[in-house]
Image (cartoon, rainbow, N blue to C red):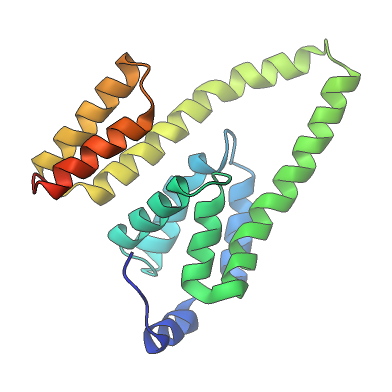
Length: 187
């Protein structure tokens, strides 16, 4: 991820409407079934395509950096907020996703423990599973288009998917192989 200088950061921070971003992320929370990775397409649309606050490359780099760092998947949202507006950006992006989700998770966990045989929990899970799969697929498609610029990148992505689905290998081996392809100049 390219560094951002003080002047560039000041210009970027002037362009960021933190209140609008906060309420947009609050709205995203309602469709975040399956976790923070499922709302990645809309965050990309909002930040890259509509408001041009990030480029495809910056978005992909921030997401990748957050995913390889230890910690929860939602860290990419926090890192985006930090990149755009420092601590105020972190608050505008992370709080609207974490506070409602944590509250709802605790409430549902309590109700499921109290009523373990309630049919509603099974019905909700069965209904949300295909939606979650579709949203994760959409997220993967957006990231793939953001980082691949020619057939070589798409080839590595396709090979990675095939190997990951067919072999029980640790994903770090795949990361290592892709890094080696980059070092050798294949991509």
